Amino acid sequence: MIQEEKPNEIIVYADYYRAYEFLLRFAKYHGMDSERACCGIGGKYNFNTARMCGALGVPVCWKPHRYVSWDGIHMTQQGYRIMSGWLMHDLLPKLHCLERRP
Image (cartoon, rainbow, N blue to C red; front, top):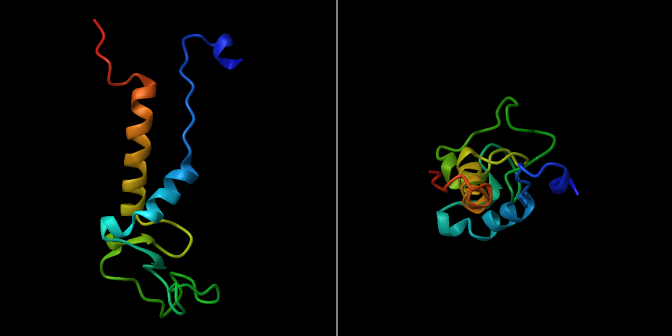
């Protein structure tokens, strides 16, 4: 319906959740830990709601590019970089950004 109302617009759908699942599944391929948080303390996942990242005495890892999760909630820059690369690889052709125009 929207496409009929806006014929010059390109409407695409990006499955952000699926891209995130893909990142978690292939994290080891990229040399990343998909289970533990880079910044955190305690337990199997290096995550404790009583002592969150930024609290006094909560350590930060030395190599955040090797982790998917920064603090158990947010991704690291490397996680976002990889995921956005996949999304853009999928979306750019749909947006016709790579086509040459006369």
